[in-house]
Length: 258
Length: 317
Image (cartoon, rainbow over all chains, first blue to last red; front, side, top):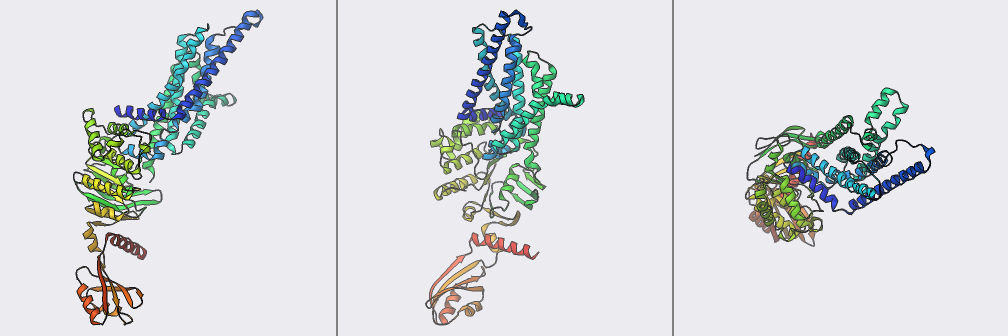
């Protein structure tokens, strides 16, 4: 376990030393802040109209549905863009530098290397989304009230979706020594799993169901409304396990070239 | 003990190593010699368990490192070609990171790091960023990481690559010093490297092991192991037939002439010393002997001859 922590710590430290990481953090924090403000302002406008115009008949609209849920979806979409950029270095950089060869010859198993790298990515996702929590007490200070359960559930969903992106990103990173190729393919694959549910309505019900089940965003919807469904958790866990296992297979490629 | 048993490694259609068998005993300092692309790095990687052979067996003390428990890799310290290193790390942090990965217990970590720092003379750069250090220091840090965990076997792939002459001498001395206590295997395409550091030499070419032995043993295996250069002054048009008649001389080459001075290169069998006979014969024929110099066949010649002979053999087949 020490070795896993050492690898995770090393990967995190090396990114924390780079200026681009802080640039990404600021970008993420700024854009999510804008999303939060925009959703909150919209809700404030709609609720003002509802209060002044009884004919508007806006029923059942609350903070979770009008602010939290769209905000979390927006954060998820932004992570779609940023996680591949963070994960592109994971294996690609070590392969490019040649240090992966050394790692393989140390008394460390491939699973330990993979888990170390994956945990560092989970750490990044955590570091990325944690500061956004600050928006809620800020909003509360101007009178907006959120349910704590919904916030916690939503952030659990964000963490799961971020962890899924990271697993897929690491898998792509293990396939190529080129950063940009890794980020590009990672983004394309995550985008595929993000939008695959969109075509579900136009296809036959049987195939549509498969597309719906494969969609990362469809499983996130319940979380964003403050609902924990074990089916969604199982989906994300399976998604992560599948891509981590695929990464282990990709790490074995060096032994297949025969 | 390291044992290669009929090892072949192919990458797609490329045969990197073909049916290689050898054994390396504990405490030996072995040099793998071969031109670029001969398969040296592949042999090193097979030894470290980086990848398995396509055919045959690679055993380290009876264990197949690739399939065995990763903890067995503690026996090996490896410095890959081009010294891959985390350039954005501070030397001290890097060594500490490697010590954790090698599973060195906390109680011994400080002592072991201090020992390798002392051995590789890294005290002055312990708190500096690796990427900003000279190539010589970076190479020593690479060696230090290989030495951590006190491995029984040290595998160094072209350890003096890219170093300046002073750094090469320092690195050689360090390797020699390390060889007193453990098995050291190094690969190089620089011939002087193996002569100065290794007890036994294995010559690779096109993925095949074409010769192995000490420098003296290898010298005995090749023809024309002694070369004599003479410079004569005299009027006779050609002294070649006269020199070729001397017993022990195999071939004579006329190198060149300046005015009436002629230079010849004479190849002789190693067992017989023909220098005095050559001197006697040329002087009896009326020449002035201006210089006579005997060169023992050096490793460079041996290496080239082995490679040339093998290439001729394969061309005939």
